[in-house]
Length: 292
Length: 303
Image (cartoon, rainbow over all chains, first blue to last red; front, side, top):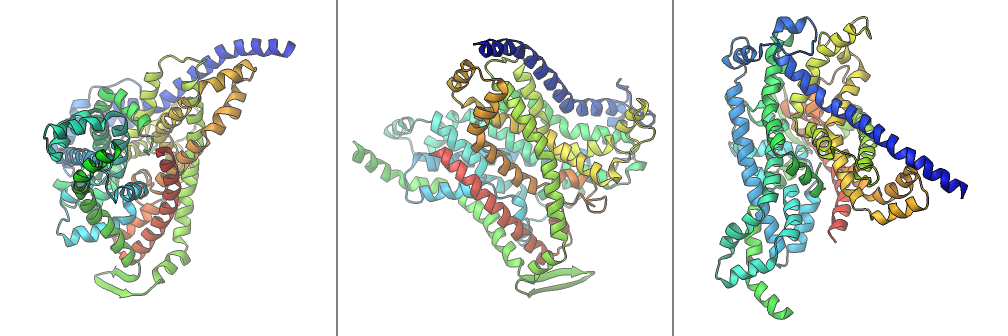
């Protein structure tokens, strides 16, 4: 009896103090996550001379000047950042579009039809899901060379059509959101299979497609390994390659203000997307728990 | 009813195959053929020495012998694993803690959406840009050093990038920051799936929150924990962007931060296809075994 009472008392105390501890830890962790971006922002508003003097937490007024120096190409003329932005955007957008469309199609094939190879295909796709692209990069490079696609965007976009992770997410989503009776009804109305897919299945899959389009876009936007091996011409390079190039230049001679602006510039689009769609993205991670 | 339905489905069957054509074609061309030719390459001597091209000559398993006997692969595997563990241990501890707090019905934390949004943010940031940012922030004359000196914690700037363990710690720390949000969300999804009646019963029986966590939450979470650990290990084996940019592809100091994929990348750049092939095959086998374990989990969840 006595111990029961004690437990109750300590628990009553516990909840409050535990809550306080939880908030403190959460604030510290949020600080760990965000402070880097704050420092990045502050430093990109400061001139090189100010930066060498040491850190202050107050922004200065050189953001636009740093930006002009970087994009206008004075000291940093070696970095074609507008091309980089365009290339990254072009490759990521097309990858996201192709990846989501064809992954939905693949998932639909497994979900809606009964055929001999169905079980095998599903197992097979699950098994290859975790194989990293890096281990086949060697053969991939040789193939790209043989196909005369070296230094071209095609080998960075087309492979997105076969994306097991996206497929798996779509398949899971279909199980909860795509009743086959709808497909059957469309058949009775005389809709062809391909048209059913485009005009009935795709619209129903919109939420899942949106989430996966964001993920594919971001993955492709951030991708460094494969593009660095394929793209050689300066004007074809994507932003991560330009960042790497910035790192390998003699950065001591570099205008640090420009370096910070360049980093800010390459992560800003993703941050904006995230701020707009964070709820869907976080939910998407929880749902397709086969990520990462 | 059943037979009639099956009869109907059968006539549409071929569409299952037709809709699979794009996936299968692209997979075969861009992933399967490269895989086969990577394996094929691993049996050939094929590299450039200066301007002369040597090979390709068939040499059997010589490449495998070379990469294992010259010790590089062991060193780099060790580096990769050390940095993975250094990032993963704090990651799983923090994620379990945050997951338990977020999903706890008795704590009822406010602002959960905000915190979840914040902790997931670093996962979406371009790893190479994040690494470049850390490189500039932790440079000898960078802001971190300047803050530490101004605050009087250090008397002179600490050279983060010249010490083996501080460089490794930086890389592990970046991986931790980038991935713990993702892990938290995954673990939380698992914790939400636990029947709350179990917690309530334990509370009625007078269990403390620590007891509930260790005796109920953790054991029930074991499958997800193993899944998270193995997928993270597969991800860890692919560690590349962060150390590559931070150390400018050198893996310095003294190659202590050179990872397996950085090593592979080096071979690919120098067109050393024999050794690169052997290394790729070794990595393929390791990730293949790990993938099979993950597959067991995914398929169990399916059924």
